[in-house]
Length: 450
Image 1 (cartoon, rainbow, N blue to C red):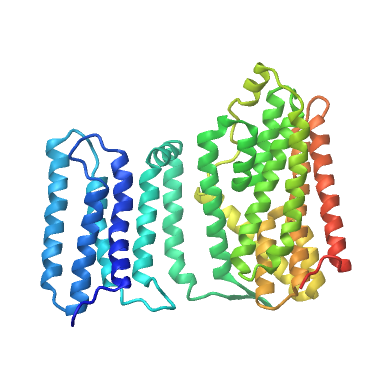
Image 2: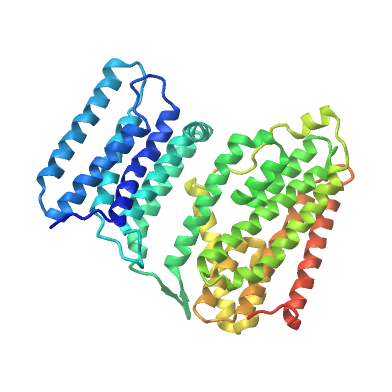
């Protein structure tokens, strides 16, 4: 077969060089010696893999590919030997990703000839994706190391145990996507998948909060809200008491941010379970309402100038009042609550149809808004409920979860004038009234649903 230089072949060579050069770009930023591997070396190494794999695919002759693999092994081995015996630096990251660059280039070369409807093949996309992910992992080396350092040994063991359990259950639950619970058909695998997603979000937020909790209540409130909004609000209230109730306005803003994080987390669930984005389109209303209230409160509180000692107080380290969500006990408790609320919502929806889902949204929002949001989105995607009912259920469950923060603040704000309780209640009532108005407009048809 004759090789003809076409635009597709040129593009393949460019991609073959780029997947290695992107990794080399990050390595070159960390160069400390003249002989370190950089953009050109990584790029040419991956291009070697691309050309040899392409020739093997076109001519069906393995000799050039075998030769290229041997050359790559020699270069990679030389890099390891040089790193161990000629330098005092530790780690083999550069040597590993250097060998990986050849594999990525070979993936590009093995991809079949693209078509006009699909200019990039699956293997090319895979190689580009892996290259970008490796670039990100290498670029955030210090941040990842710092985040891991902030997690205790016990928390790491608990996370590892839970990951093993998740990996063990995955192939089993794929065989039983639904189970019968009395008259109900419970989506077991979907619930399992959503619990894993939520736990992952909460764990990532937990690590961020533990590492950067001295950034102040705003930072703590927002990222803590992703991990556990109720526990975050309780921690903010305890911090407010520790500061002798000096800054209730600033603490109430942190509570608003915790609620905003919870609303965004529910938005992620809606997008995952309803790819049509019909529910999300209606969910944007409450989200914008919460953003609007938060901006107004920030502008109002920003008018009050703080003294340097006040800024130091507010920027003090907040005690995290919740443990790792990836500990086995906490994860199982969360999974049980999530499953029970999901069963309640499913039972109400099947027993009382559309109205039952609305009632379950109001009640279940106090315990786990994410569970109600998940069941509502799932029921809509399967055609069990209408878009209007699903949107109402999602919005009501989220709003109820905003209101339950009043209870946590009131229980924690036990001393003094209870200024924080009044501010949190006022903010929640303002948001609730605005959301109620939004729901009325939906019901009356002023905001189109379909």
